[in-house]
Length: 314
Image 1 (cartoon, rainbow, N blue to C red):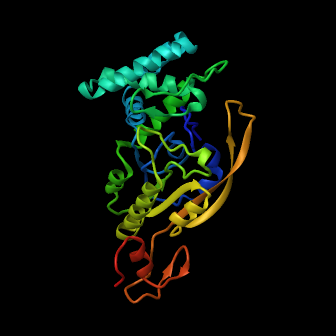
Image 2: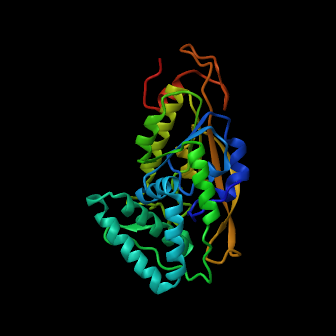
């Protein structure tokens, strides 16, 4: 199993033993919230469509896939020469300045430079958090680590797998990335920003926009639509809260315990409740009803699905 080369809040590495048994066989895996790509690296599907709304993350994955050696060499240099708080401040300022002007020039070398700085910031910032301010850009403080591991071997393995599977990387919100689902032997796995367990744990800003409760409801509608129309399997992950269970009640939810670090000290951790939701291909329920749903057994017919996607039953 290949380890992710970046840190990512909410990454699935610790959940994989619970998650993988719920990911069914398929030809293609589509991830609208790829994040740190731990599921991509831990599975063996023939092809992948990996999407995220964060343009810096997708730019990094594209650059690594196409220019692996250039990215590694440039990243090694700044890891060696800017490994302190002052150096971190310089790289972050350069990154934010370049990011604000990126729309004016999309030259390959500039994209590689941004990818290199993004790796550096990810590995050196506090807890690997990815957070942006509309005014200043990436604004996570320095992590004050004694040493920072440069994951060159993991980077090469990532690039090798992405090239071997001809992975497609999309910078798009989930609504657009789900538009690539047109049927076939497809699994959609969604790991959106989690619904907060409390008001003090409300971090859902992996880009410049928040992912709200309304966004979760829109996601459910979109997933039910591709499941019903195109017959694809769907799996989701989220926090185990009353709101989660209400919004995702159409899914068969499996509760799990996850060990989470709560500070820069890896030994300081606590268990958290999460859910894995499964929406299998719906079979057998014709207009007259009386069929069988793979998740819930005997089913009343189309009405439950029509209600879920805002349509009238037959």
